[in-house]
Structures are given as structure tokens and as C-alpha cells.
Length: 162
Image 1: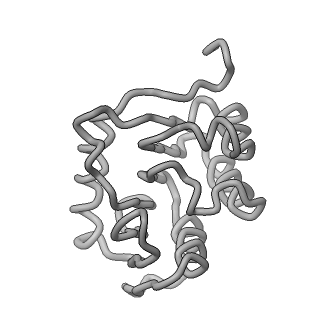
Image 2: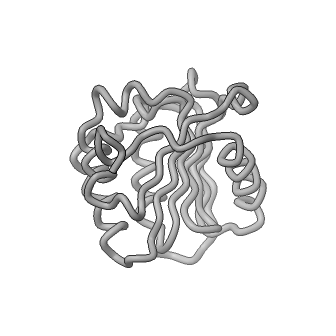
Image 3: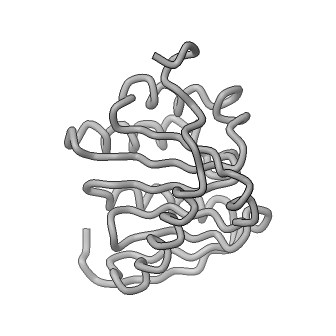
């Protein structure tokens, strides 16, 4: 992977999903995801599952933090993400936004402190991918933290919560 800064604007769903994969590949310790419900990001695809699993297995300290407006899709139609949660319950956390964060409408995937994909609105395919830029990533880290603080744990590794 190159250390050169790069910024790419994306216009379609396929480009968006490819950008998510690229940013996941850059992650070394923390992945933060904010999305409406993960449906548009291809999170139930085998290749996405494999990338996320490799990330989680790389180091026991790696963390995957997810905040969603709706958890229905992940519970009902996203068994691979549910498997990640079950297999790595100490490293994967899935929250749902509270009322104060429901106005957020721009999905984010942030890897560590320097890489991200920012979709401008969850109903539109346009997005931006940035690699190796701490300064541009900082406002999105702050935004994610605000959304995380306005959310609660929503999906447990087992149906009885153990």
C-alpha cells in the first residue's frame, strides 16, 4: 500500500463498494462504520466478510464499531455480519442510533485515523474515498464519535444476550 495521499470522488454503487473494500484493506487497528442499515454497502457479500474477518484476525486488539439507524437488515438478511459478531463478540460492537442522532444521513467507513469513505447521503450513490490523510479524516472521526455517543448497543452475539 502506498503512503501517498489520495482523494477520489465516486458516482455509483459499484465504485462505492470497491472503495469500502479499499479502505478496509488499509485498516490496521480500528474500523468505524456508520450507515443507515448496511444494505447498500454489500456487507453480506463473501468478499466483504473475508476482508473484515482478516482484519479482525490480524490482531486481537482490532475493533469493528458499527452504528446503524436500523438493525432490521443485519438481523434478518445479513448472516455474514452476524457471524462476525458471534465469532468476534469481544471485537465487534453494533449500536443503533438514539433519537438525537437520527438526522445523520451520510454513511461513513473510517479506517484507523487516516482513511475513509464518506457517502454524501444514504439515498444517493455519490461518495468520496480518502486515503492517508489525517487532517481530512479528523472531522469524520469526531462526527462518528458524536453518533456513537448518541447510540446504544443493539445487536448481541446470541439471541439471549450471553
